[in-house]
Image (tube, rainbow, N blue to C red; front, side, top):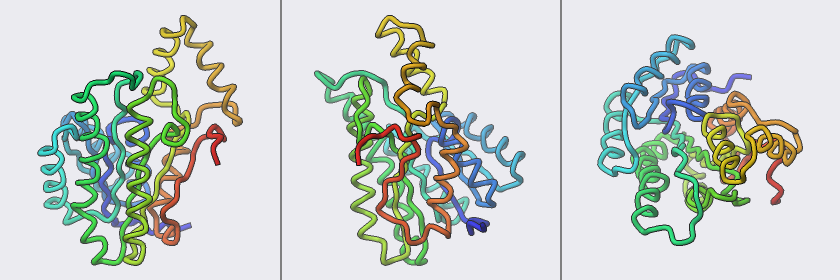
Amino acid sequence: MDLGLTGKRALVLGSTKGIGRGIAEALAAEGARVAVTGRDAAAARATASEIADKTGAEVAGYGADLMDAAQARALGDAVAADMGGVDIMVNNGGGPPPGSVAGLSDDVWSAQFQSMFLSQVALTNAFLGAMRERGWGRVLVTASSGAVQPIPNLGISNTLRAALMNWAKTLAGEVAADGVTVNTILPGRIHTARVDRIDVASAERQGKSVADIVRASKANIPAGRYGTVEEYASVAVFLVSECAGYLTGSVIRVDGGFIRAT
């Protein structure tokens, strides 16, 4: 199947590691031109170089901390200048610190809201108008199963990813007639370094071994295992492809059957 991504320009936020990197690499493997981003500019450039060497695609790295609105704007300006615009916008925010929401300070909420919502919306808006004028564009939000089935001790993520998911659903209805699709993809337990850290934190909080935590977690997944980054990225790439032009406003789960909500 030809996904029609050769030469398409993609900006993938939070793509120096984890599922963001997986998506960036999968897009590059399909012939897309990819902008890799992360807080650490050197890491972003190194990741871009590694992906370019592996895929033969044109890949560039950019540093930006999305907690800083000015850095988010500068990122958009730099990508526009270097690539001439973006056809595919992948909103993938870094995971916020774990913890409960009871008594959380306004400062913490504001900082995380800027990073996980406002900066991603602003960057999408920076390229959305041109997508609509061209009659082709893809916006993808990579969220979390916690957006529909809250995860204990991940209160900030549960809250803000649900907001971004519903923004995407609303936007989809506004731009569909212009050839722009907007979808959300929800990971269940995809095996990344962040999931490993969450398992360690759960073990410490519950006074159990990490092996016990992982075993219990897998027991709650009908597939009986954690998913791979490659499995997740394959679905993401399809959603932003030419083949998915009539798929918009959807929430797609890559979770091994973990999410119980309809």
